[in-house]
Structure formats: C-alpha cells, structure tokens
Length: 111
Image (cartoon, rainbow, N blue to C red; front, side):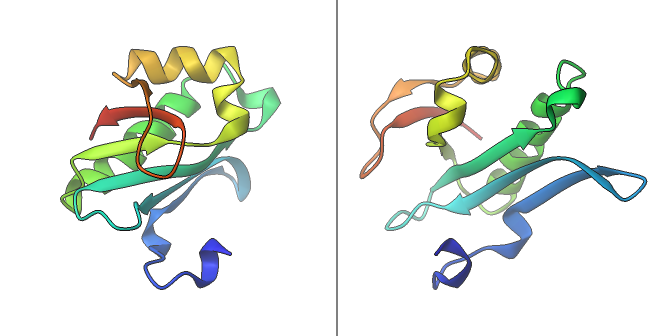
C-alpha cells in the first residue's frame, strides 16, 4: 500500500474541510525512481460540493507541494479522474496534457 511505501510523503495527503467535514482530498506523492517528478495518486471532491472550485484548489495545493519539494513535473494517474469529463477539463485548464510517464498512463503538467 502507498501508506507503507518507503518514500511515502504524509504531507502530500491534503484534505479540504469545513467545520470538521471533509469536502475533498488529494494525494500528491513523489514518483518512484525520479527526483524531479511527482504523482497525483488520488483526488476527489464530495459530489454535493463540486462546481465550486474545490477541485482546482486541491490540484493547485498539490502542485505547490510538489514545487516546494523540487518536483518540476507532476503526473495524474488516478483512473477514475481520467474518466471524468470534469476532471479532464480541470486538468487541461491547469496545463496538464496527455502523456505516458514512466510506469503509468495519465496526464502530466509542470508544477
């Protein structure tokens, strides 16, 4: 599991909350075998909270986290998100494009 991986970055697990209620979460981790790349492993917003900019906020927080750690490239490999038109549109707005990172399919962008 990712929680037990040697390079697990607990600060890369980012929650958005309001009055103790989780509205969304994103998991930004280092890419195995790369010093300058990161991965978005998991990402989601409660259905009732969508279309209010929370997904953009989470994605920007994750990219800022990657950038603080010197990870210049970020890959989104979350299968569910890559099948969701809203997520694909949001990733495109943030500069991600289709690519094949080493060992995973997904989309990539600069952090």
